Amino acid sequence: MNIAELATAILARAQADTGSGGLYEGSAWSLINDFAYHRQAAATSRPYATFHIPSAGNESDTFTDDVALASVFMRVVVPMEDAGDGGTPLTTASDILVRLIGDASQQGDLTPTYGFHRHKLSDATTDTYTHMVLVNQSEAHDDDAEEFVFVLEFEVHVITT
Image 1 (cartoon, rainbow, N blue to C red):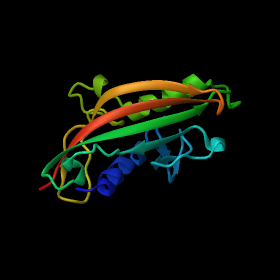
Image 2: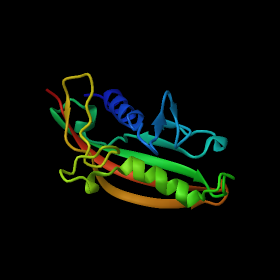
Image 3: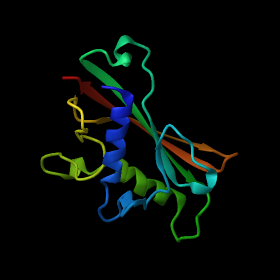
């Protein structure tokens, strides 16, 4: 397994959220303006989301082990000011966070129909993934940039076969 394959699987899951109120519609982002790996979008494109798979600083991070624990951080950035669409920044942020976390807790078998919590990623390789698990959530705001920043941390085991 490598980080690029994991990142591709995460992006594919986000783009699969095409249901009512979803992140993606047709061939473009709908609820957010961008969802990118480790790249900050321009302030004019808020709301947007990024994700990152940080270095854990241990040997499993080289992905040479047959099982690696990967942390995935997702960052949602929304403007503090109303966008003029009748919504509020916190309503917008809440809508995005709901779609990223998912609806697993609302499903009888705990399998989400959208979102990442309890979702099993898949990709074109022979690697397998355990369920992604939301382990932390935090919020901050940047008065200078006039934006709210919400961070979700997920963990997933990647098993190389």
